[in-house]
Length: 194
Picture 1: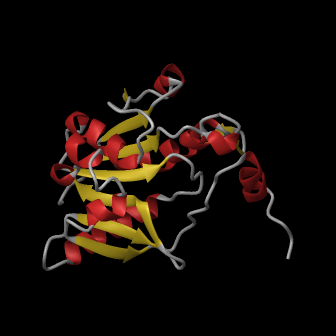
Picture 2: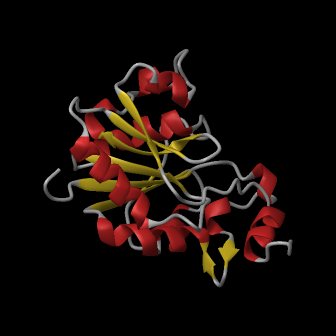
Picture 3: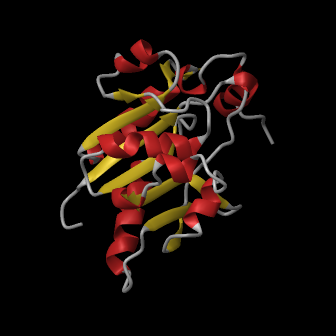
């Protein structure tokens, strides 16, 4: 990766059940939707952006990037990866969920630096923070993304799919909040005083 050859894939295809039926990426944080925060931070650092969504396709399209609907909607992130694979024109893909307004471009910088330092080339560079692995944040080879048969078979869970690949965990000093409700977002915007 001497030059960026990366697609940013933002996963926005959930049902939004815990957000009152609203797509979490379209909720507002500090005056902009969450997906706008992600695009502002990461889009300038990649060659292509693709948004995976299953509802509100026109609304996502207003952000100026292609929107891909899952072949099997609401079947989870593996189905989204499989549906988007044919539309990614770069050898590498940076996967990011659409519900974290705090994501930083330094995450991509660290993943790319780690790849260059590897002796054995990994298929996936997977983010780990201080608490746990973050399976929906990774830099991976596009060729290794699952096909629809894999995605909808017995290995639907994303970590089981990763178990079939050469994965290198990379510690990232960053914030990966678990945004599931509007209240989570309000708490993030106005953290309680300690």
